[in-house]
Amino acid sequence: MDFSRYLSRLAPLYTQGGEPLQLRGGAPEQELRAAERKLGFALDPQLRRAWQQADGGRRWQAVFARPGFYTGYEFLPLSEALRQRRAMAERAPRYGGYVQPHERDARIRPGWYQEGWLPFASFGGASLLLILDHAPAAQGRRGQVIAFTHDPDTIDHVSEDFAGLLQASLQQIEADPEEFIME
Image (cartoon, rainbow, N blue to C red):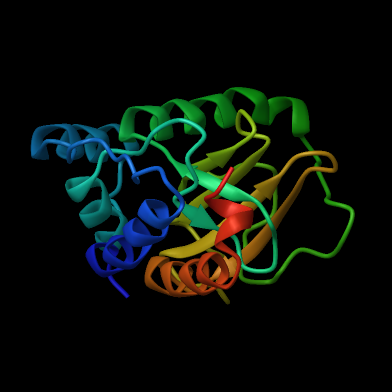
């Protein structure tokens, strides 16, 4: 599923809930290129197209749902995604030797932070993040979606790619829109 199709199915759910889905205008190409230079790698094409269409959404408005969890994630503007990544990098030294409480999925590299991780969705002031993994473990796949959950800090595999997250997210939101959309 692509982001345009995803939004075309998500927006009516918001309208039915009495509040329109509010997204920012797309990120300018020069900002996307500057972000890629700063990151040192090309953005995942699916996520890049999403930011070209909408540079994030309104604060506290769920745009994504993590399969199996009743938490809606807001879509971060590109600048906020980069800020969240910097914050993770700055905190990472405090987590030297970090081991999460349950065995990590073999598709995700070890550690609390990796340079190839880029948050794109958040809940609760970044206590929960959805992250595009540009540097997976050997068993993983570039572009897979992983999740950071605080307390206890864990990193878990969510989806093989952004399109898969969109499909699973939409199924979850459509199955229970009151949980994610209606206040």
